[in-house]
Amino acid sequence: MTNEVMRHKMVEFYKDTAFTHHYIFGYEYKKTVYMTIVDGDILNEVVKLDKAGHHEGVAIKFKPNNAQKLMLMSINSEPICSKEYIEEQFKVSKYNRGEIFEKIITEKYGQTWVKDNIPYTVDGDITVDGVAYQIKYQNATFLTEKGMLKKMGN
Image (cartoon, rainbow, N blue to C red; front, top):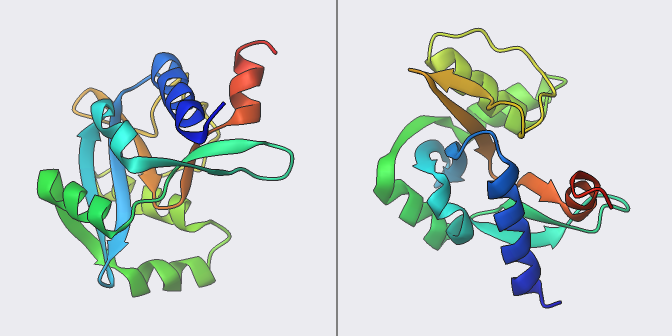
């Protein structure tokens, strides 16, 4: 199976099993962290197939290049904080950059952030005005090959 076929298969599986098809993407561009709110139609344009963790096979990840970041910025984006702020929080926190971004976004909407492990098939990361969103920061994994096979019962 080619990488492109595998990427497409994994994106479609993710979309078929996801609780929500609404996303808040976070990414750094020119030392500023932006957020963009999009729906799942854009997933094929912003995810890539990459190596997953140890014994996980491959994964689809949100790893936008500059062209993809500019495309996202043209849709519905706003600056959130500096890259420096995320890095400062990362250095003094037990959380990763994605969790820090999720906390920033949750608090932006006046909600209290709590670290959880709710699967993407059960709920989003945040609900705003009745709409559930998955929050993904650059380099985030959507789905691993191992995770997909497990959900398929293999």
